[in-house]
Image 1: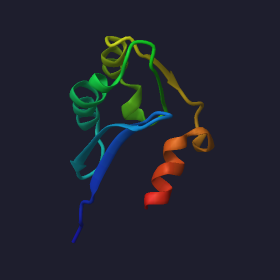
Image 2 (image 1 turned 120 degrees about the horizontal axis):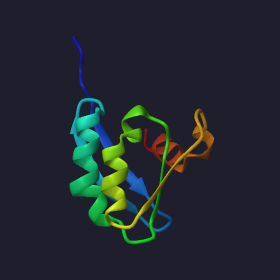
Image 3 (image 1 turned 90 degrees about the vertical axis):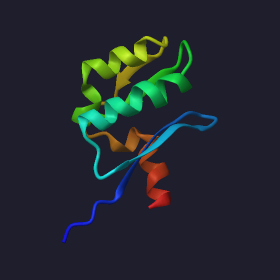
Length: 95
């Protein structure tokens, strides 16, 4: 018997946790797009910098376009660089 745990998606800024959402099961491309447009994009501002890891779902051109429409810049971490990803340290504490 397989049990699906909820996926928690959020972004971190220096001041706060932004745009938190839960999904049933694991992250997939459609779930990520659903998160970015109605949840994350409204919590960003012109000049915001969004840094994502190289998870294949993150590298979707639609995602970059959605975030760019609010004036945010999108950058990707180098491959296999989890040490540079503050989100990994944050979620490790909660797990």
